[in-house]
Amino acid sequence: MQKMKKTVEKKSKDKVVSWNTHLNKKYGLRGTASRSEFEMKAQTFILGELLKEEREKANLTQAEMAEKTGTKKSYISRIENGRADIQLSTLYRLIEQGLNRKLELTIH
Image (cartoon, rainbow, N blue to C red):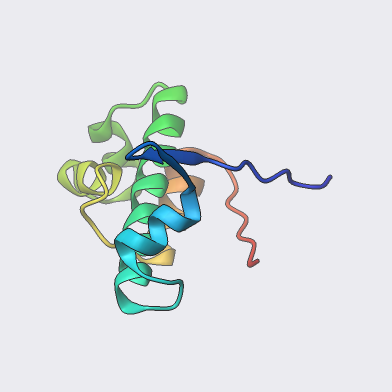
């Protein structure tokens, strides 16, 4: 299955620019410190949203998930709100013990 890439555009002062052009202007080119920081924060946010969505699908509260995984409710909340770094071992525990699911990682 081939992934299709969407072109997202933003209108700026009556001029339409691509999403990448917008990101380049606002955060710098890929590989720069400011762009890397933005992308890391974006991925942290996405991970938190995904975890929250899956937890809710499993009908678990943050407190219940924390109890199942040996973490604190406040930590689950911080992860879901993109305000906490998460270790890979903790992510596995949340997915596998907390949600009874399997986590697979892919590097592109």
